Image 1: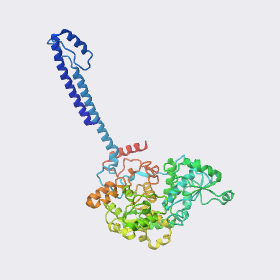
Image 2 (image 1 turned 90 degrees about the horizontal axis):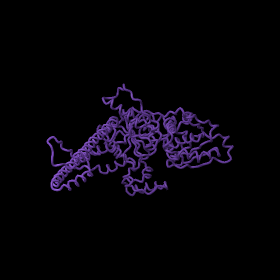
Image 3 (image 1 turned 45 degrees about the horizontal axis):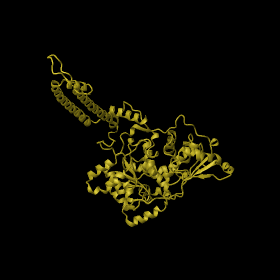
Image 4 (image 1 turned 60 degrees about the vertical axis):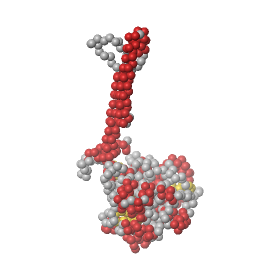
Length: 564
């Protein structure tokens, strides 16, 4: 019962008791009067009063000086009700106080600067609590070693789909599927027929030897199916496409029997074909593939690191932005950016390449937060969050729709504006014909940046967000497009201070802090919760402030809640 209701209940109870006492007194007076005039009426009244609950018994008219006045039963009932009201009032206070203190103890002390009610400004460059977490993707003691090639159930061929990062998700899941099937995995084939028309093979982008050796204890991987096996086959490899996000049981029920019968099976269009939620050991295998085994080739790695070094030479800290404002992205999103009939026609023609895309309402998609922010809006968001005009920006993107005219407002907000083209020049020429290799260079610089800003929820954004969590919760900002879109439309109706305050409010929970990660929340490649552990809490930690003890209690409480 709430405090206000309990108080009202106790007052009403007392008033009822007084009213009952007054009525009982009046009735008693009338009864005494009638007793003097009619003895039979008195007898009947006394017999009736024996059956009345909480009423005052009839009294005789003659009393002695030493006779104690009888107790009023109406008073007793009233006091009981009043007591119940006081008890309700007291327990209401206690319950509310306990709830308040428990929230202060468990949540507020540790995440006080991260939750929605915090008053202290965010550290825009680094999360204070990232130091309490570390990566933990090692295989468990009971995770059996890989099945040798001769003892496996057959050979698994994988044909990936999409751009570089979409194919990366397919490669990661391919290793896990091979483990589920006890199959020998053949080095996956990359997609040569997607929108980007890149002829690069696996060996041109990833270090194949490193890939095979790093995963040797988990899955047996070969470069190709042995010629002896191919010659012994009566039919070519069986080709099939599995449904998206299929559970391990599907592979065991539908794919394994074919694999045992045909010895070689090829899975096509292999992207997001494995369920998001898996056994913890399989999730950790995903992390070992994605964050350790998939290493870029030496030429790509060296150029990417040179660009990182040049950015760090110019500035102590820098931001990397994945604008993702290319024509294909805008056409796929179905959004409109004010370019008139020219924009509608150009993006409409590109959109025809995906025959299955439904007709979308541009205004509806923007309200739902599905439209990428313009470069100008990204710049406004960063300035509102507190990044100064002299902050160094590395912009990772392909062809920006609208070209330099679209980028100019962002350049004006952040003059220290760099891309791989401005940093590399001649060094970049060997990579220019290959979009996937260019994307790999951007991936390296974004991964090494102090702050990474995404502009959509695409494959590169998800993979890098997950990796940056894995290596220490490095600051990753994801625009809350659903709330920001309405705010940008109304920004001319408010001053800058009000706009900045509202942007900071919108971005709470979208800054890449540890408390944003929850098991089962979002794609695993974006929130790899099975591969991130909390560090033991040491009492002699020198970096703690005066809130050390309360933070310790909060850490332990949060851990108990999370892992119980």
